[in-house]
Length: 456
Ligand SMILES: Nc1ncnc2c1ncn2[C@@H]1O[C@H](COP(=O)(O)OP(=O)(O)OP(=O)(O)O)[C@@H](O)[C@H]1O
Image (tube, rainbow, N blue to C red):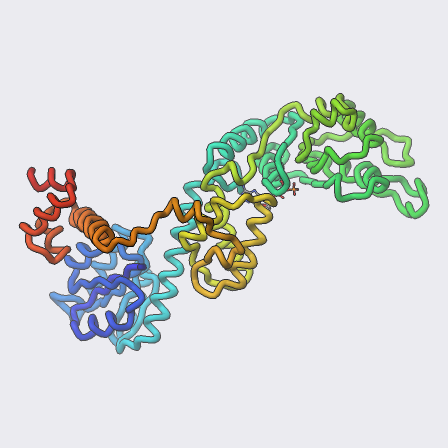
């Protein structure tokens, strides 16, 4: 449950707010000292702070000091200051000091609920972005933390500085084009064009003119001289996707261009020098195709001076979740939705689904889930995925009441102990039990590390 800290010395207002915020874990403080203690202890996402705090509740100075301390200790926390009716100046001052928003008394539950909810959403979004920023490797927009993707990213980063012909191998939708773009963006050619062409999606008879261009009158319908993709990429990078689907007849012309770095337009007699970097990609096994004479061996060696294997999603551990969270942020914006995240079951289902269509399949499932989801969290059902028995077994559900109670008790004790910064008197206080009771619980659950702090 999201945590909210309410700092107010008026018990009536504390009560009113506790009632309004039944969907949050609400903790209270009545002055600067207890506010800071609660902040350290609970790390709330949002704080509502009455600027009129004791010892001088008629003046905002203590409130503003508290605000400054909160912001310096936990700059990510969203602080909503609550001011007296005519205290606009201090409200503005608070915002200039870093408060997220302000609210003037008297408190209206519905309005403050909306402000707090917006602050929580913003906090959660920023938190996700912070996590993503930490997990994004050096190379541009390639999202992924797994060993496999990191290895591919490191290779890409190194070759970006060279002009070596690169072959990207990977199943459909693994991010081959994303890698090609990243290599281009990290090369000295980054300010020149990046031109992509998919050899499988263009009919054989058109592919040659698409690539090499044509002179006026070269064939029926060639009304004006037209540059091909290769010429358009001059100075930059040409990405030839699905090179394995290039017709064998065109491969000889391609080889000549790669060896001599000149082209001739169809119907032209003039050689045009080109200076471009070439990155190719395929999901096919080019080496097998070469041995079966379905692909020219000399062209295969020419395009594969270096090969990067892009791993499929199933070999990328938790990258699926990183990608899913990043797409969730994008699609929330695109479809004007406010889905907060994924249920634990949805995460398990995504981790275990055999992603045949790879990242594209994940994107499609997420798009429809975000548009159709009934609740604020995406479930396996929303994604059209199933929670299998095997997944359930990984997450055994205890039903025995005694076991459930014991597990919950020992977890609560440990949590309180951490919150109390390993001080056992405070731990007992937080748990609402006496010190002797806490000692006997520590013994009962054999919490050795807590015992050490109590013996010390
Ligand atoms: N590592 C990544 N980080 C972020 N987005 C990614 C990543 N990899 C792929 N994507 C996204 O997944 C989608 C598919 O990627 P891309 O088009 O690069 O795959 P591909 O291997 O070239 O596919 P195909 O073989 O079908 O052409 C794109 O929308 C892309 O933005």
